[in-house]
Length: 229
Image (cartoon, rainbow, N blue to C red; front, side, top):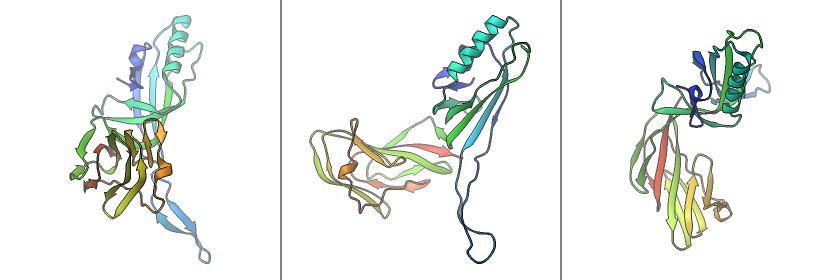
């Protein structure tokens, strides 16, 4: 049904789903005002957020039982980003936060209620994670940049470690021993719970994974999830 943060809505309340509307990605193109002529100069497109609206009923005439159902739904609808899984997309999920809770009437038990979710990351994300060793060519499907990270376990610290993709290379003067994760989507790197960005060479150019064939060189394992608009 509708699963949010791993919990099915039907398991927390007696609901009858009326409709699920997944809105398009809102466009917020980057532009700058023209100095002399009227209008603005288009710079580049930019994907904004996406809104998902769920309309439903709580078919319960007993006001006490109905109120408890509403409270359960409110507790279920977390206000921070969690996985939102919908029945018509079994292989994908959205990262969404509930931004509008239901506003029930005390009398009209038959009324249509609404939950609104905002996807600040607007893309559909593959549930299946893929992986290859660094230096192995791979293909990222989809039509939006994949979520990519590099993992490596070091038994001892290593110096001057580099990872490259195309013409971009990132270098760390030191990587301490432990479990390293370089998150290319968030542009962060850490070992365990500690950031190692203090070892990042500021002259590096961050890797930018894209859809299609690519190879990330270095030592470790590349793990990615494909995304769709």
